[in-house]
Image (cartoon, rainbow, N blue to C red):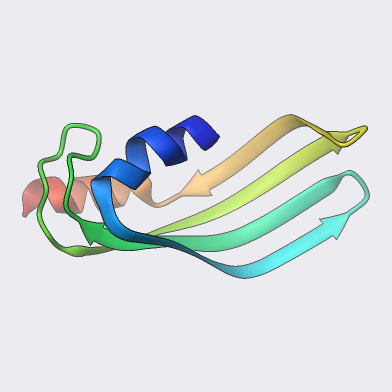
Amino acid sequence: MLYFFLHILQPAFTDLQVEIYDQVAEGDQVTTRKAIKGQHTGELLGVAPTHRAVTINVIDIYHLREGKLVEHWGITTLPTVLAELAAS
């Protein structure tokens, strides 16, 4: 997850921001609904820069055990965003 953010997303977007809409922790799980936003100024997974404003919506669920991440589930609009950028 961190690798993807640092090595894929960050180089692809100028002024990259993460806006957290909701975050709920219960027991050993944390759920976050957020948006990753930025200007598409670098290559993103094979898609050349379009210089368009982009928003990728994400829902992450993390399962922790003894303070360590043991599982992650996620839903993201990244495939839709990539298709839209490639069609530009």
